[in-house]
Image (cartoon, rainbow, N blue to C red; front, side, top):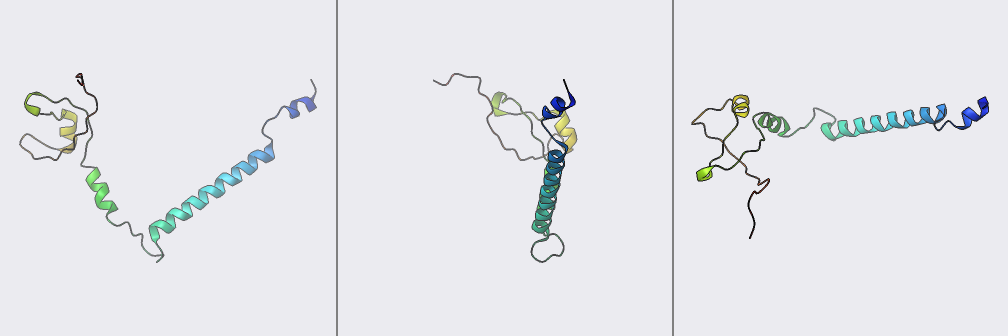
Length: 107
């Protein structure tokens, strides 16, 4: 085998890799600029995030977990979630129930 045979087998030439890197960097810059324009709005001033900070704060006080329905329709909140959310017996919480799997025959 000669050196010429080795170079013909190269799938990615240095110039191709350099061009690929340049295109990737340009795409990243364009994405950053678009995000900055979106956040700053047309005014060019302080970002208008609306109620996003409030929503993010509320999300830190949420948990998602799977549990089984017990007798009387009760559900249990696991210890780890109760500790993370700092909730105790008697506290009022809001729940959203999404059925995941049913262990019964649908007749």
